Length: 172
Image (cartoon, rainbow, N blue to C red; front, side, top):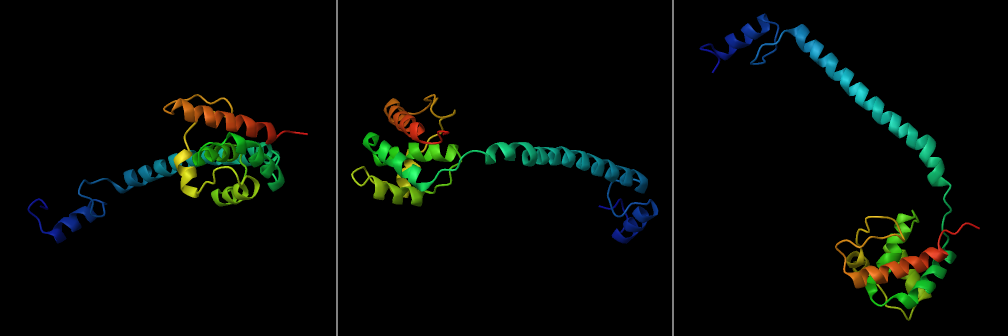
C-alpha cells in the first residue's frame, strides 16, 4: 500500500519531499500557487455576484418599491367583482396568482377570510382548493398562453384575471 514501506516511513518520505501526506507528491510552492489561483477565481466570481446585488439594491429596489400597495378595501372590491365569475372553489386561485404576480402581500388564509366576508354566496375555498387551482401561466396576466391546461379552466381563470385587473393597481 505504501510502496513496500511502513506508514511511518511513507509519512517521513512525504515530509522530506515537502508534502503533508498526499499520495501524489506536489511541491509546497506549487500547492500554494494553486491556492492563490483558487482564491483569485473565487474573488472574481464573488465580485460579479456583489455587482448584481448592488445593482438590485440601487436600481431595481427603487422601481419595485414605487409600485402602489393594495389596501384591504380595494381587495374586497375586487373579490366582490370576481364573485359572479366563480363557478368552482379552485377558480379563486386565478385571483391569488394575479395578486402574487403583482407582489401584493396576501396569504391563502387572508384571502379565504376576505372571500367569506365579501362574497358569501360564491363558492368558499379552502387552502387546498388554491393548491389544486394553481398553474403556471408561462407569461404575465392577462396575456396567458394556455399550455397543458384545459381550455375551460384557462377561460374561467382568464376572465377572473381580466375582471380583477380592471380594479387592481390602476393608477389614479
